[in-house]
Amino acid sequence: MKILILSFYYEPDLSAGSFRTTALVRALLEILPGDAQIEVITTMPNRYSSFTATVPESEQFDRLTIRRISIPAHRSGMLDQSKAFLAFAFGALRLVRSQRYDLVYATSSRLMTAVLGSVIARWRRSRLYVDIRDIFVDTINDVLSRKVVFAVRPMMSGLERFALTRAQKVNLVSEGFLDYFQHRYPQLSYSFHTNGVDPEFINAFAADEAAAMASAHEPITVLYAGNMGEGQGLHAIIPNLAKKMDGRVRFRLIGDGGRRAELERAILANGSRNVEVLNPVSRGRLVEEYRKADVLFLHLNDYDAFKKVLPSKIFEYAATGKPIWAGVAGFAAQFLIREVENAVVFKPCNVDDAERSFSRLNLQFVSRKDFVGRFSRESISRDIAKDMLCMLGKND
Image (cartoon, rainbow, N blue to C red; front, side, top):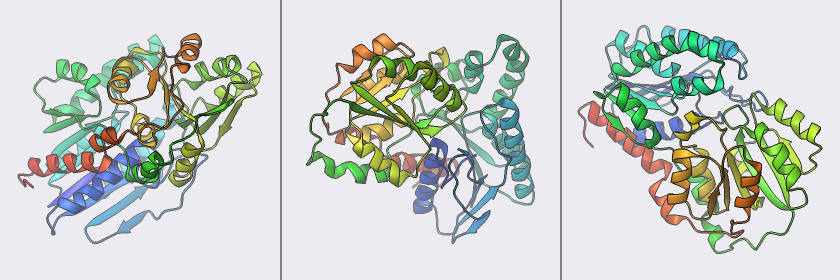
């Protein structure tokens, strides 16, 4: 038995796709038969230009082979991202041309890795499992101009159909995606395996309940850690919010992305003195940053497409027991209100609502053991792995 795993990101890269795929591979190695082989095809670390990690292009373990493809440097522009993906796709096709796979697994946020998975599954006559982390065709309506959407949407819809109709199983990381996909592809088999809480966060904060944080003193440290792109919309909320809450709140923003430069310019132009923008850090250092923070901040831009998503950052934040201050709407807001104690939500990009919601936070540690138990990454990864074995007729 041989399984191909396609993911644009893999450890030690810093991204939701990397963490998700790495955990899945570990789960598969635990439950696969002893003669099974896993091949991972991914890229050399490239998520952030400001974070680098040195790894070999090829690694061979007992039942696992990892092949990393070098791609051109890229940021948020469609052109350079397209060049990067084409380098990945052509490299992957070269690597698989003489291989046979029983199952191809493709995890995809921007759709094209799913398309690549479908190409390979058709070519190598393999079963296909597609893991969908975003609705790209829906998102472009909000983030691109009408002229560009008019030009590219029919093509992207066709690629989406090509990617999914070959799949024997489609997993959606957010139940908010179901209406969109079920309306278009009612014949497909869907599952809902969300993102989850990684072991390093569970272990790092498990002891913090006994030493629960004392009430914070002003200025309160508010931490955001993650991507700084159009989707997160930090440039649309942080400069004015920081200015309004100067003296009460100090923002630490850790990450990188296509809108970071615009964010920094807006902070400077606004004269906000209570914001630090820092480069991405390793997961070990990130745990320490979480521990030092009083409040964890989350934000998505005010686009209709983002009302369906469930950000992976929610799970990481929740494990810390720290208060969560979130500018989200739709399914993400419902999920936080229903599932995460001591989390408040406000309307995305709305400074006044953000300020009002902040006063509702309890600036104390709150145990979220039940949440962590339900959404541990290890448990979710095992469930996906079992789905894959069932597709191959190998029930655990």
